[in-house]
Length: 159
Image (tube, rainbow, N blue to C red; front, side, top):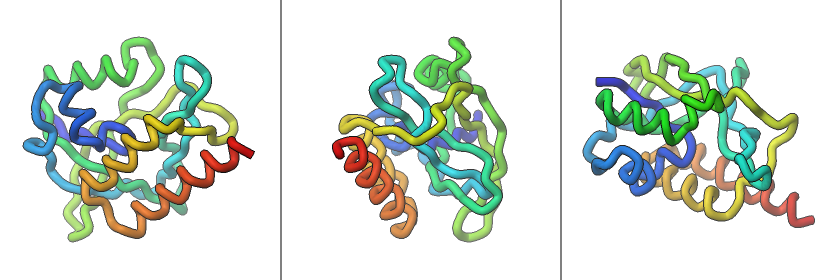
């Protein structure tokens, strides 16, 4: 079994359930924080129109996400989804902290290709992320911060 740390659309229980062919809510282990990383919409989609979420080292930031207990088969399905075998994402083991101070290690993904600036997440992806923030019960202040970021990016692109 693996602890998988999701910070983007994989936080969305319905979306992740479709990928791993199991009810993601049943393997959800809780909300955890990754210190010293920032969450950025700087991973370009293959169509080049939208940008997906990625994490980058930043000693003053933190990223909240959901941890899921997955098996070997589910890990492989996530690797396919994240284009790991196409070298678009790299796997990284990270140290996470829960609100109560409990620490665990988990596997997550970091983009190998990024844009110099954050881009538009696109309406479909933004909706998946927003629902995922709720599904994973992330802290209200963090949820609001990400929703504000999505609004700012989508508003900027329209101008």
